[in-house]
Image (cartoon, rainbow, N blue to C red; front, side, top):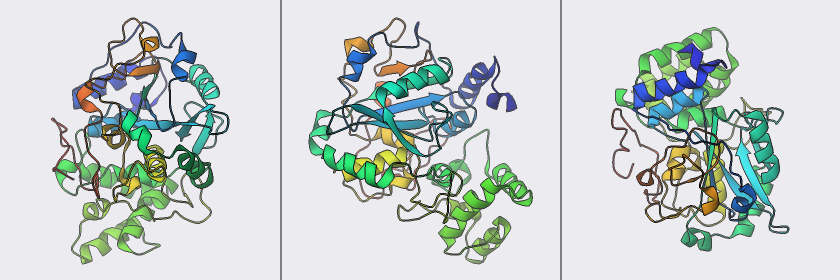
Length: 361
């Protein structure tokens, strides 16, 4: 398994084998990794549209297999209201921009696409454009979207705690899918604690402390405290992320001092500010899969991507912007979950079917 994380000629192949073995997911390839008419595609992208991203990186593969998700990372597009220039918002963009600070970054589409081509192997990275529906676009205030992002989110640090806990929504054994299990994961966390690894101490343990209303407790102390309250550590982990939670003062990419921010939560926050997400939800509970399943995009049953997106070997329905490996999403896997209060706070997706449950979770 360790080869999944090491850049070598077999890395992508090993990641693909992991997807197929544990989630039944397979991937096709197209003949080219780029769109020859990218400028014509760029002209059709609107503020608020989604950018889906997947890398065969080991860590993202393990995350995606837990949910049978085809995209484990997401960004979104904004147009500068003064110049109409297309911008890309990417959170934790180090794979595309290795020199960038890990956090919420906005750059021009042209720079983003050039960096993507230069820094990301076409067999390793896949990106696709998922457009909002006309109804959603009409509902949004794009000026508020821009103002909110540039004044509240841009350049905030990335929260690894948000990544870990947004995907844990159940305390039972079926909340973690094979090949992982609760006992082995907890054992690894305890080993990291004993080794004084900062990621565990300032990400996992901090998040458990805030759920129990305490501070400064080590992981084994958290487990003991939870037990005294009739809770397992998994009951604590499954407590929903709250948007008002703030990270540790003086933060960086491991210890965020602002709100809990990851790729999908930043997108959710921005759409909420624009008036599109109007239910009572915690954006910090939304994974990239939760976002692309929201019923806010162009109707996947009738949507026809622009002709400029058609290239040999690409039989998908989305407009794939880069990568030779197809995104793989089918029409029935996108834009089908309606907005409702407190959604995505209790959803699990047990293998082998990976069906989102319980209803209205």
